[in-house]
Length: 160
Image 1 (tube, rainbow, N blue to C red):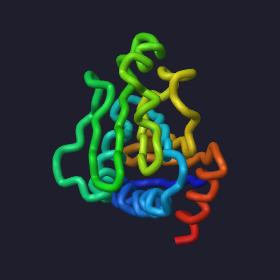
Image 2 (cartoon, rainbow, N blue to C red; image 1 turned 90 degrees about the horizontal axis):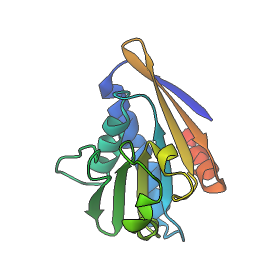
Image 3 (cartoon, rainbow, N blue to C red; image 1 turned 45 degrees about the vertical axis):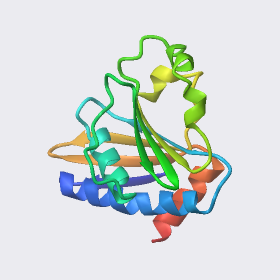
Image 4 (spheres, rainbow, N blue to C red; image 1 turned 135 degrees about the vertical axis):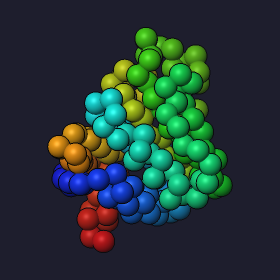
């Protein structure tokens, strides 16, 4: 587990840029499965802000918005695929089967999921769970590894 505090949004964005480099290194190594990151926190806590920072660190120059109504936004940044899911409005996890959810989780993809608990049973387990909480004007962020991949990623990130 890694616990961090950010006094402002700029610090959260800088963290996202740094964290993205660790994620990118893993994907560049041609691993056999996707990276799955769950983003947990209250409405407005900074899940989409963190996602925007990560996606932009991979080289995306356009807007990064929450896919609240579309459920998923795709960012094709060859050779990678980045998928940002927001499952907040999902009424039944089985709806994910109709959208071909399994096709998103493949090698060289990064899947960032907000409100992942609403898709339980239809989505892969997380490699890392990111908890974002309000801390006055700032944010507390905790990274919880959930797999061996997640443990290795956090070990490499913390070693920097």
